[in-house]
Length: 122
Image (cartoon, rainbow, N blue to C red; front, side):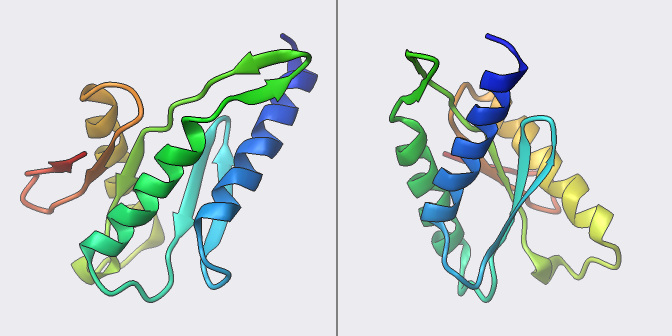
């Protein structure tokens, strides 16, 4: 459908992500079709999972671009700062590992990273 439609899809994806998070959270595009969300001051795993489920619900609705209905199903990787990361790239590495675990389970899922490598999927 071309670069212009792809760019518009990325803008709409960003807008939907922003509706799923709080004003204290940060949504950032890493590149391509990958986004990172930094959740500020979450209490527990269930709170992060609830946000992941809100994102899934938002993406169950079609995008309307170039007079066409398009669907996108996000794969979400979750990790927590409580794992005492020393470098930001380590956080991204583990979130990425969880995302690929989610992808291996099928479209539109999430996975919570666990340092013992036992993922929690949904």
